[in-house]
Image (cartoon, rainbow, N blue to C red; front, side, top):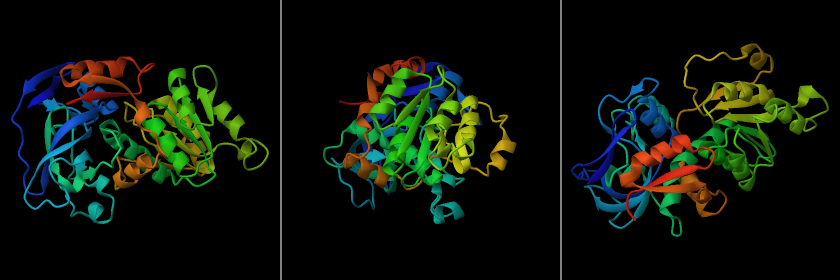
Length: 353
């Protein structure tokens, strides 16, 4: 099979590898579409994300969909020809975290395109059937691949405990920010503020349900959020701020702003991760406002709900796919996603037509 393999920083090579076999409990999936994630771009441009370092050739890509080619021993509920999306991480199923429903925190996780595990920029993937999901009739393969980023947004909304009538702010209107915005709207938020530095992405946020947008290059984002939320709970600055703020850009300034934008007693959810682990934050203000700062790591049990919401038309992921590249042009796709944030939302690699 043909694969796009990362050998080092800005070094992707197209090569042939053997087609894997479906072991017991697995399905062999003929991959059709794979989204380019920010983590793929980081590995391509930097060769590492924190302690995860590309030390050996690795196939990138973890947002995938395809068609089942074969099923392994003991697999039920799937058959060749079924269209599926793949949840890219599977865990031990036996530890405390797995047994309590928080399998995303399992220390023994196998996750696609995280060193040293190969991803889905290839024609075939053998994967546990327990982490494959049928695509509903009428759902495209591109939408199927988008279930992975949508699951991140869904989990962020759950971590923030968004309630009907809430005011939320999403810092960063990239793919994760836009699916988080929609997930918050689906959860009942009625004031939805999107903050970014690109008008192109803010216009997209408006189309997808943002009630307010703020270009942080042109205005003081915190002042605008306080103005928008003034009067929601009472008169005066002490009552302003959002119920839930989501940081999805993975930048230091937006991390600080997420804490500053949260109302007294509200919640700030750290979805993105800044490049440096040590960040200066105004902890005194956060503590005196008694806000909850909540981290999150990937997601757990979000694919079924994500599929249902997209199938019902409640959440739109199809429009987020703005550019397509062939598998032969996988490196171009990574470079484009990195360098064209003012014109691209989600870049997709078409593995097969």
